[in-house]
Image (cartoon, rainbow, N blue to C red; front, top):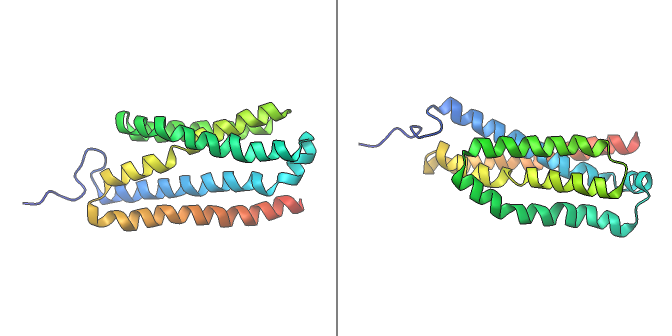
Length: 170
């Protein structure tokens, strides 16, 4: 006899599984808005902080991409050994806190540190998503769930382009 497809250690109902997809999709949307807006505001950021082109490149490259990649391994380990929802919540809290802290930065170093924190926080989304969907959905339902969550990337980019355009005009 086959086990109920939603009977597992994390979620027990289809409604809870759908809510997880909604939350993970929103996390992807917000993560990509948070990545794209600073890239669109390079000129005002450069002017406000009196930054060089090299410093701008470091903020977008090393401060974000390098640390995002470096955090993948310890985060993957944490996802395998710690409650995944706790890892995801901690990451979302960290990236939200660091995004807000960037508002109060006055120097390149402070802004660099804030972007590192944002990247470390956002780096939890992908590994926790894959792991959680594996728990929440049976094999034959994971493709659709992951497609919905992945659409959050492109929704976030679209929203950031519209919002970023408004910010640039402002």
